[in-house]
Length: 109
Image (tube, rainbow, N blue to C red; front, side, top):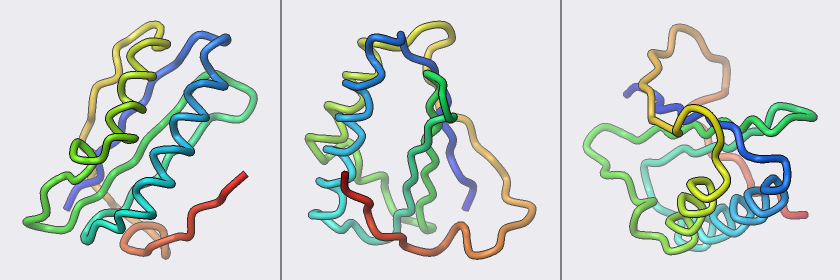
């Protein structure tokens, strides 16, 4: 299954709110524990650029729209996004070592 990537930048004053929304969304995902999903959120160090990666097992629907905190994250991103609008892009995996297809613990704080 391809990995979906969403890349965007936010206004400097919105970074803390976006980071807080990301933490809330991942806490909710960890509570819900949906099957067949691998999800990561990254921020380029020292910048206002974020990247979300999502991989779903074959035949598994995206559970994120059904999780309130994940919907709030999307609303927060829309509020603070600057430049090109966040648009999902499909990525083909050509090589990986223990990166996709594994579940990582949520880091709190």
